[in-house]
Length: 148
Image (cartoon, rainbow, N blue to C red):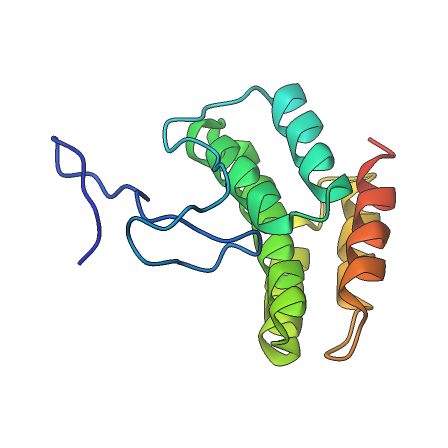
């Protein structure tokens, strides 16, 4: 059963490891992005880049998801796509190359049309394969994202 707040909204109270995998309740997980995180565009890009530079794409995904939830309607596809690409990077770290490629494709399709650097991020993501090195893949996406 998923954790819920007093208003019935889903929350992520379960601890997670550095790759975003759920851990048993009571375990010492790593600090997480708060459920109510609602960044500006600039803050989301800054925080997402920081997490990617630390090789924490799961956390970058949570940042971009936070922006997606509060962004204007015309930006939501962008933030959802960036979040999906970061989940793909997380799958690479966890050894799930097939799942990674699926998410890279979905994320890239969502960010098409937002212009530079997002077009380049999408092209870089779709160029990654099931056996891509996770650290090199994270570094590639970060390089492309830093051009914004």
